[in-house]
Length: 427
Image: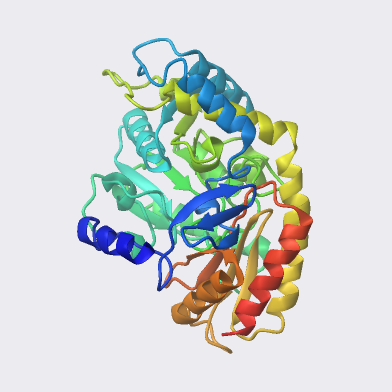
C-alpha cells in the first residue's frame, strides 16, 4: 500500500520535493508525542512535522476548538471583522515585547517573512537586506533570495540585494577560535565594515537559532550588539521566530530575548508551532512600520476563523501548562544525555542548542568535514528503533535536528535518547 502511494507521489509531485528515508513512510495518525504509519508501526516523534506540532498530536483542546469553529463558520477573509483573529492578535501583541505592536496573519512562515521584507523595504525605501550566512527564511522567490544556505537556494535571481553577515555559526568560520566576547566584537566590526561599502540597507533578518542550518547560533547578545549598530543608522532588525518562538528554547519565550539587552526587534515573524499543524504565520511590527504601506493589502486565508480557533486553543494550553518551563527542564536532561553519548562516538562533532531545539552534528572522525551519508544512516537507524528525527546543516546536510513537542515527558526523553544512542553507535 505504501509502495503504491510512493509511485503515485513520484508520478505527480516535483522531483525536488524531498522525502525522508530510503523507504518513505506515510504517517496516518498521532497522539501525544507518538505517530503511527500506514503499516501500523508506532514512532516517538522528535521532529513534530518540522517543529510544527508544538504541544501534542491530536491535542483534545485544539481538536475541540477546531470542530466547534467548523460548525459555525470556517472562513470569511480579512474583509470582515473576525473575532478569533482579533483575540489571537491581542494576545500575540502583548507577548511579543514590541511596543505599540500590530499583527498581520499569513498562512506560513515563508509568507510571514515575505511580508516583513515588504514592510521593511517600503518603510526604509531600500531593497538592500542584511541576512546571516547559513540562514533559511522560506521557499518563496524573495525568501530564497535572502537565504544564506546553498542547499536551499535554487536561484541567484532576486528582487532584493542581499549582503551576508558573519555570526550565525559559533563553532565554524574565521572567528570560531575566539572567546564569545571577542567573537561578538569581531562580528560587529565586520558588520560596520560591510555597512561602509553599501547603500543603507532596509533591515537585518536573522534567526536567533538557525533552523534548517542545523540548529546553530551565535553567542547570546550577538544581535543586541548588532542592534546598536543598526539603530544608529535607522536599519531595522527582523527576528525570524518561525522555529524559535513560543518557548521552544526553554530559557525564553522568543529567541530574540537571548539578545534583548538593547531592546526588542522592530519586527518578528512567527509560524509553525502556534497552529500545532494549522496553517498560521504572521508578522508583529511597531505600528509605524506595519502601517507604512500606501496601497491596499488583504489576506484571503491569513487569519481565517478555523486556524485562529486552533491558535487560540493551542496558545492557551501552552501557557496554562508552562510548556516553556517543560522545554527547559526536559530539554536540559536530554541535551546532557546526548552529550554523554557524543563523548563516546567519534563521528559526533558537537551537540548544541537549547530547550527542545537540539542539533547533533556528524562529521568524519578527527575532522570538521561534514558526513551527510553517516547522518542519513543515523536517521534510518533511529527510524528502525522507533524514533523520528530531522536533518539539516549548512555546507552539507550532516546535522541531526531534534525538536519534539514541548509536552515531552522525562520518560519519553530517556526513551528517545536511548534509541538515538544506539543509532549513533551503529554508524
